[in-house]
Image (cartoon, rainbow, N blue to C red):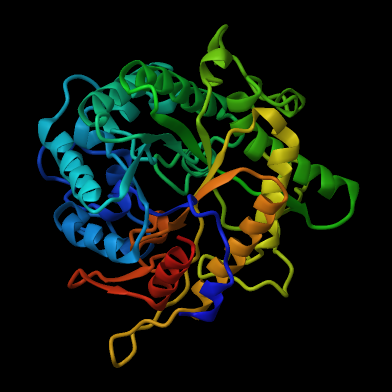
Length: 451
């Protein structure tokens, strides 16, 4: 056994898993009645995706899912977090369900259960049906109702076999990258004029929770997966500390306070953000009781005050030079993980539900050696450090019930294309051959040692 695997000590009922998302791995974009999504449109625009990559085939998971489930069984995970492509189920985002789309996820769930793996579907991982975008997307309040309808359709077909559900993945990233700065689909550049997107995403979460609870058995677990990180100021200057505070208000608090406190942070008013999309009763709908809160963590954020006259009063800055960087350019700092978890416990107190770490991982330039092996010690070191930080937070009283590595497979990394590799399993995109990396075996040993 790898020595570092022995040093990790978690409760026997702690849940171990891996995560993926539909658009990043499935491929088969034009098969079995699937409709176009905003990412299909975005990828078709020249210059949007590095190297002109597309997700036309991705990891071909749509056809190769039995092999991927077999890999998960070898890994020994308790749960698999995946997402359901909305446009496979409702090609135009509304109306009757596409039976072939539901059949695919039904087959996947049956294959997982046959191996003793708990399916954990996410209903929205950024791939809005293009027809809904044409009608206004998340700026249109009706999209929240369409999402609730989608949740109902999926729960009616799959709810008899799925006990853990996630509504949304990272409402902050989808809002900012897709609508504020435009580096992700749908490619809009609206700066801070995106409150209605945030609000309708969160409102759709609340409506989906209501729809799911009306159908699912009483013991079903429902949550949301949000990206989170503390913001660190570039200097001790007051204006840089204020910039860090504002980023946390726009990231952490804007996307979590409504869920747990039933209110938006005061900083939104101080920034003069237009909140006219908010209607009476909306916050009560958003603040539906959650069985768990999913947290996606990769790294702390470093910010400073932006020059006057800019659209946003804060800007990212370089992290300290001594910190290692991943292939995404993100700093490696596991202390930020425990810091975040302890902050959440302090801020939300009794309002904070049990936590699942729904994403944590790192991309590094993996190389296949002459024997066909992939040794990835930097990924192992990253995961080990973050699991130690997680254990420290749990020892300090944070209620964490499980941990999902991002990701099972190397995959289509959105605007970055196929260059960054986050997977525990290497994918040769020309042949679709899967090769478990050293980190795969390390994680298998961690799971086995903690049972």
